[in-house]
Structures are given as structure tokens and as C-alpha cells.
Amino acid sequence: MTSSTMKRSLAVAVAALAAVEAATTCELVGSQTSIDLYTNPQIDYTSEQTEYWSTSCGDLKPSCILMPTTTEEVAAIVSILATNNESFAIKSGGHNPNNHFASIAGGPLISTKNLNQVILDPVTETVKVGPGNRWDEVSAALDGSGYTAVGGRIGNVGVGGYLLGGGLSFMSTEYGWAANSVVEYEMVLANASIVNVNANNYPDLYMVLKGGGNNFGIVTSYTLQAYPQGDVWGGSLIFDATDDVSTAMLAAVRDFTENYTDEKAGIIVTAERTVATLVDIWVIFLYYNGPERPAGVFDKFFDITPFKLNTCKTQSINSLLSGNNWAVVKGSVYTIGTETMPLPDAEHGAEVMGKIFDHWVNVSNTAQLEPGLIASVAFQPLPKRLAQIAKDKGGDMIDVDADIDRIVLELDYSFWSNLSYPKIDQTMRDTYGGFQTIVQDYQDSGVLPKDVYLPLFQNDCFYPQDYFGRLKPEKLALARRVQAEVDPNGFWKTRTGGFKIPSS
Image (tube, rainbow, N blue to C red; front, side, top):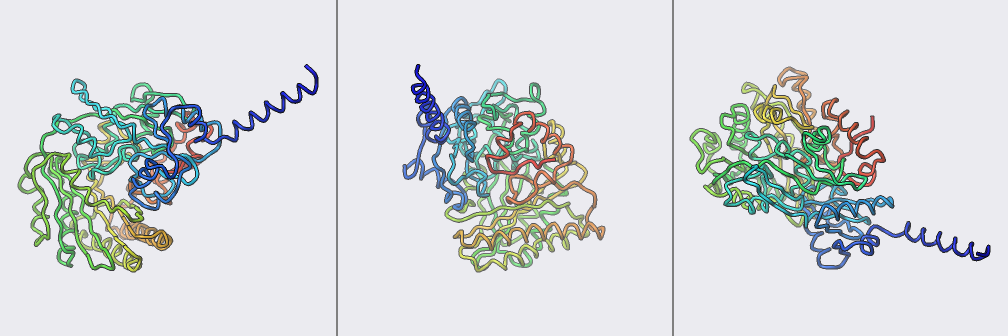
């Protein structure tokens, strides 16, 4: 071979290599695999972009949407992503409203929509669930089987992010966080290998997946413990938020949390204010694992009269979860935030709960002129019973102690336009920041217990909140160690959004 021929051959090889390196993930997946791939303005692309709870997430346009149908196809995508440095996102149900967590501008979006199996094994009493499902789809598949899985309280919530964030359920006082009922994870690691993770073969990875978010890989199926269940009783009560009703509601949820006499009962107590307070209501979501509510369980809520609407009835769990979908506000930008507080005792309950509620009212008033504003705060019981059950089931990253009762406060602000986002961003920070200050002030004065563990609930966190920083130091250290083992090059840490494990 002559020198000139060798130079030409080398030039061709270099050019070919450069072309491969320059090819995008979307181009390589399209040319090298048969994985379903959609680009704008194909119908499947535009339809998938409407499946976010927040339109702000849907406004971020991925370069393509990849819809794998098997774990092996997910591994193929990860293998291709490893050849470049493109940012990407993984989407389950699109419930998380934080931009770039399950949405992406300019990079590929991996939608798990077609990883949607629901396979019940009555012999082992487990159900294998794909992350592409929503909880009303899971409950529909199990309807009539006599079994249920611990999952979301609103049917439209997606499986994947919910379970990786811990998952608070109507059934949590019976079975713990939803993550406590995961028997096994099938997942793709950063090196594109496929592993089945359970308590026996990868105990540390198994632990960090229970509340550790998307830092360790893409979970392609969850094997969940299935529990016997027949008809349930539940629905919603709606009240006008008069001063007397608000006072009674705050007292009732405080008392319910402290005196959690029946583990089969579940509630979410939510205050809603809309359109410059033209609508000002309380909405209670009620659940009981049985066909009728026993006397005494929810009496203090039913004693608050009059209520505007009562939808509670005997029904299937699928009917209840699907019926709760009315609470999903579609067509708006949506944000979520949270704080955790110790439950005040009966002596100081009215003062402390009232202070929390009034702070939310006052701060939400500062944004009431933002077009389409809906402000809500939810009081979610986290009783000692739940914490103990979670520990008895092997624990999780949240690792709540069973020493005190707590309330998880969830904040939601919905509004019409991204133009309002800067204002609502600050409003959200002011709201949960004010909650934290109120709690600390009452701790300093001795009204609330001090030196107690108050982790954040990841599923409800706003993007700047320090989820990992609020975990116990030993759990944070475990997350760091496992991440270093399974993702030494920081593939998930640097290429995807979400709550990231801080460096030591």
C-alpha cells in the first residue's frame, strides 16, 4: 500500500469515527435498533408531551421520545447514551412537576409507557408491575382478583417515580411506605448491565432504591407484595372554608394523627383556594380498607357540618383511585413542595396548626392575582404506627423513627402561564421556608419537641429542596457509597435531572 493510499484510508477511518461520535442518541437508536422512536410533530410525540401534570414540563421539547418495550431495549438505549454526553430524562407517569426531572429540552426522553405489565402471582402473592403504569391501571388489572398493591392515592399518579421516592399510600398505616412492599427491582445500571435486585443478592442497592430516587439506574419492573383486599369504603368530603370549619378541621386532623386507632383508615386533608379566593374550600380524601366505615374512625370529620358534597361509598379500590382523578388539574403549570413537622400536643394544637394554616393563607395571598392560580396545602398524617411498620419491613432511606407522630405538609400551586413561574417559585419557597421557621420557633420555645428527625418526603419536594441533606447521615453515606459502586463515572448524576446525592 502506498503512502498516499494509507493516508486516504486513515482519513476515511477518522471521518467515519467522527461521524459515529457526532451521531446523536436519537440517530443511533433509529439506525441501530427497532426501538419505537418518535419526533416532533408525530402524533405519538405530541400525545406523550401532554401526559405531564405540569404543562411547563410538556413545553420542554425532547429531541426524540424513545419507547422501549423490554428491559433489553432499555439497556440498548443506555449503551448508546454511554457513547456521548447528551442529557436525557426518564418518564413514568409525568406526575413530578419539577422541570427536567422527567422532562428534557433538546435531549432524548425515555418514556416507560410501554413497560406496562401487571402480572399477578397468587401463589407467591406478588405482582410484577412495569413503571409505565399509573396506579389506576394497576388497580384495574387487579380488580376482581382479591388482591391489591400499595400505591398512589390518586389513580393518575405514575408507578416509577412514586416508588423510587418512597410512596405515601392510603394503606401506609397497614403496610408502610409503598417502597417497603417492593420485593425485587429489575433494572439497568450505568454500564448497561441488567440486574435483579432484592434483599439477598444486592442488599445495599436494594435499600437505597427505597427512597433514593433515580440515582442508581432505570428500574424496568417492580415485584411488589400483593395483599388480600375486597371492597373498600371511601371518597371525598368538601366543605366551605369558614373560620369555624377551618378551626375544626385542623383540630380533627391533629387528633386523628395522634389517636390513630384503626390502621385500615387513611386520609388526606386539603385546603384549596382559587382565583383570588373566590373558591375557598376544604377537601378530605377518605379511605377505609373494608366495605363500611366503623363508628368512631372518621366521626370528627363528619361532625363538621355542613359539607357541600359527600361522595363516600362502598366501592372497589380501582373505583376509588379513578374517582380521585378529578383532583388532577390538567392544562396548567403546576409546582409542588413540602415540609415535615412534629405533631403538636392537644394543649398547643390549635395554636400551632392555626399558625401553619394562617401562614399558608397569607403567603398564597401574595400570588392571588397570578392568572389561574390554585393554591392548596395538604395535611398528611405520618403517625408512629407507619414508621414502626416501615422499620419492621426492613427499613428504607427515609428511615423515620417511631418516637413521635408527624405531619407531612404538601404544597401545590397551579397557574396558567410560565410567565408566572418566577413569582410562584418565590411564593413556594416562602411558604415551605415559613413552615420550617414556625416549627423551629415552636421547638425553641418548648411547644414542639426539639432534636427530632424531620426528613422531607421526596415525592412532594420542590426542586431546590435538600432531600438528601435532610436524611440521617448514615443513609446519606450509604447512598454515596452505593452510587460510587454502581455508577463510578457519574452517568446518572451528571446526565439526568432529579434530586442528586451531594458529594462528600
